[in-house]
Length: 497
Image (tube, rainbow, N blue to C red; front, side, top):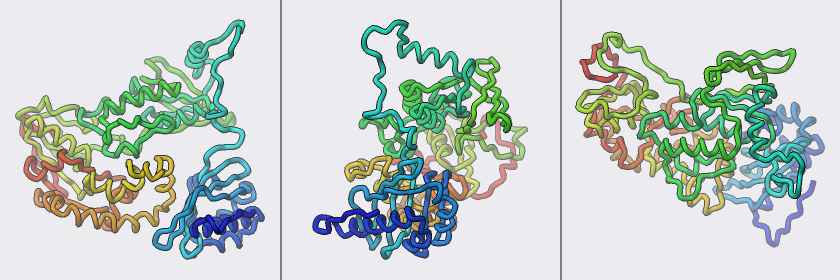
């Protein structure tokens, strides 16, 4: 494979990356694994999203890359490597986008070169050959013009599918969980023509948001939260209120024509290896139904399961006690005392709401918490990928997601350390006020690598502080009890645990 380069009009980084892709493509097409691995540095990483490995895989170093190629190259047959757009160079790192193909797929990737050798490589599938989505020039006509005897309209076809799928005709995929994860996967499968049913215990799409406390909102900015195919309109607020998100998810499911079974609970599932299918017993609107798909997907959320600590004396408590997932509003507790156990986003939201309703509230913090001011986080960590300025620079959410995915986790932590060190310096007065209130702070445990790495290591969420929200009031408006305390005294009547 040879890519022509016009050195008179092509930038030096683009020339460098084009030559590297040419060499990589030639080595892979000829099956020369030694030549391919020699194009990577000793400290190098290949992150593959399904394209070569049919999995989400990261391999490290020349030996790891050689192992990946030995097990996948003969079946994958990669070819057609071509640079996409222009490459760039910052601090000696040349980087850019490229496209390629395999025997079964078309792909897109991102690569970074250090000292002329591969440092990080991302490969990911964009579409499977022969199973392309019907979009753009390939979209369906939608109707048959002229007179057609026994014509079936779109609405009649849709009603027939809803009536038959799961009863007289089985789905190919069943997704358990109808939050945003289950919904967007259902939308993708719908576009690919895969018969799919989404099973959700709540009645309507978006209820997992609607049913939470009234002040809940997304603390991630809008550019980070777009759903595939239907991005939020450009007037959508930066931080989306929970009921607005609920209505959007319901509209999205309707527009994408998803087979969404609300008020349905999955009771039991078993796989039959002889038929290569699942048997899933569900209860839909109080009636039993057995589904027999080929594939079962759990989309029940990464942080949605209530975690309730065992508190000595709880059985003697004379007030109300429940998990934050059941909290709605502080209106019922005016003039009372309350205890909120926990110190992440929900705890702060709830404390702020209780304070707004005249409640004497105490937060109990069991371990240190990472806190990031929203504006600072946007400027230092997220803005380059997810913001209006990123869009103006041509970085769409799709590109931003892939750029973030292109950084191996081993590198992510060290790359984040200076970001959060600057955050600590810039917002030092803010953090000093929190510590004065007794709040235990950290910046990613002992690693000091901030928000993403902390969550992935420990599944512990940070607090994202939005200006004028609860954290700004913390040091003077409600009490924090920090440390590994035991609540071994029975709270007084009227308190809430």
